[in-house]
Image (cartoon, rainbow, N blue to C red; front, side, top):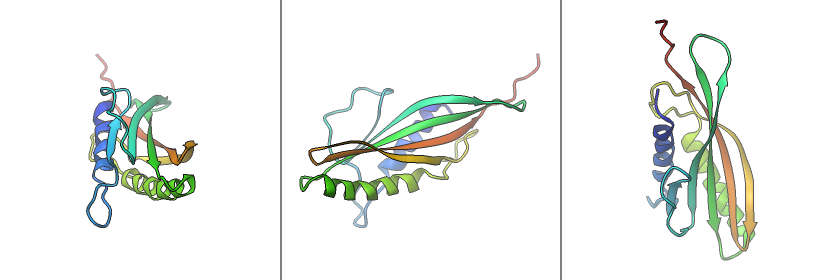
Length: 145
């Protein structure tokens, strides 16, 4: 099975690869929260990925876990909060579509499911949304020694 860090790296790579119609990256900053060094000063728009928790799914001989990840999308528009929200909607949808249904070719990892998109913060033209994702991790069947 792929490690949690490897799964997170694939999510980071998928977000980093997002481009607009002119081939420009959608995000100025894409980082992990918690696993890597403190990110540099914020550069909008930004995306931050982090692993929340794992929950064991009961049943069957093969250990299976639900893994939960959040992606925080932060944007700022000097025209105000309404314009920042409009910008955020497009970014939220791009990130959702880049991750939803993908297993990134990782062994023992199920397709990602977007569980929710929720407002995190709104202040002074800056807005943050959090996208919640779940995937499954299928561990090897324990051997009987």
